[in-house]
Structure formats: structure tokens, C-alpha cells
Length: 132
Ligand code: FEA
Image (cartoon, rainbow, N blue to C red):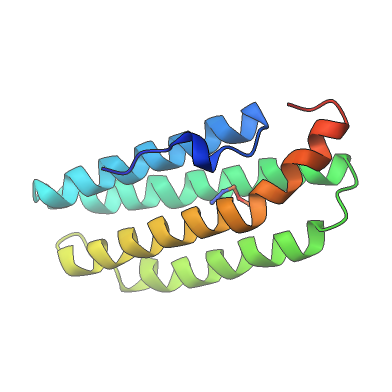
């Protein structure tokens, strides 16, 4: 099960909601792999990656309009993720279950580490500016 929990909260509801959706999409991806619905794998992976990208844009805009001092480093982390995930996309084909498992593991580790280690830092900064 890929479930979001309160330990992952960044204390900014719009971001928490988007993070929750990332976990739901990972859970869907895990279901597609376990049920060997291979035709769904590629679709779910692409949906997850494009939603992650959309989320990064929203998060970066929120930090930018609030002059968040660590924005540039944060953006670099997002960009590194996008580059790495692009490698998976290039290698991926519908029936590649092993690679789908590898992508899922990578996503889970990356999302959890990034949310806890990087995203959580903007919470208090934005909270001070009235964004909760
Ligand atoms: Fe800085 Fe948010 O990005 N979510 N994740 N992962």
C-alpha cells in the first residue's frame, strides 16, 4: 500500500492534497503491476509522471510568489528527478513489469525523501506568510 500519512504533511493544504494524489497514483500503479494488467502500466506511469511535473510547477510557483529563499536548490532537485525519470520512460514498454517495479520503488523513495527532507522546509516559511 502506498498511502500518504500525517508524517508527510508540509502543513500547506494545497501541497498536501497534491502529494496525496501522488500516493494514490502510486497505489494505482502498484495495482496495475500486481494484477498484471500490462496495458494499464504505461498509462499509469505516464499519468503519474505528468502529474508529478504539474505538481512541481505549482509548488515552484507558490515558492516563487512568496520569495522562498531556497527556491533555486529546490527546483534543481525537481529537475534531477525529471531527468532520471525520463531515462525510465525511454526504456519502458507496456509489458515490462520488472522495470515498472523499479520505477515504482524509485518514485516511492524519491517522493518520501523529497517531501520529508526538502518540501517540509517551506511549510513554516509559507505559514508565516499566512499560507496554510
Ligand atoms: Fe518539491 Fe512536492 O515536490 N512532492 N514530491 N515529491
